[in-house]
Image (tube, rainbow, N blue to C red; front, side, top):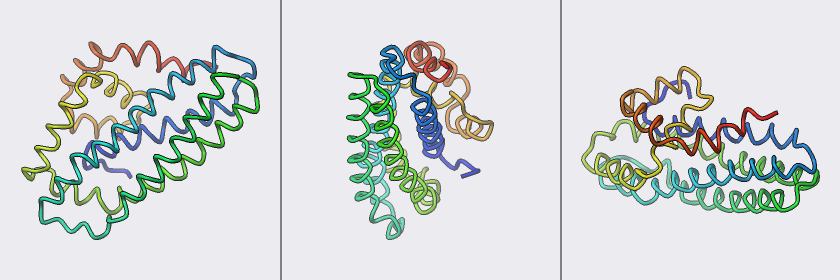
Length: 212
């Protein structure tokens, strides 16, 4: 997607970048390196948490809010099933990453890469479906009272991790993604949350992608 209508697709772009980074990291994994395995596991735990939160918030807040409007949601009735498939693939990938952290051998890295490749297939198909059929609806109704209330609920629920979330969205983002983020989050908010409350991401996660 070249145009971000809401923050949702900015998050999608971060998911895509992170999955690609794991693929490259596991392809070049130095067999026997417990340090690298631990580093990747820590980064995976962060990704796992963000992916879980993202889809939970959709199910708990945004989709019920859309159902309170007069939006035609017939094109997206199978999104719940896609979320179930995504959760199953995520569980498999998380287990594979845990195995790698327990024993950082070449075969474990290969298995983890295969599990993440499967998750990528499931997740990226789902994101493309959302962007094609749901995103235009979400954008059209984002100022409807139920959607504004849902956004307020999500911000409250995600507040304690907002700084790390903001740093993750910016890490490796291209100009289009950054512009889409600034459209939804005022620059002072990005600065304050990212710089003052994003230390965990900068300290523990970001170095994962600069390690050779």
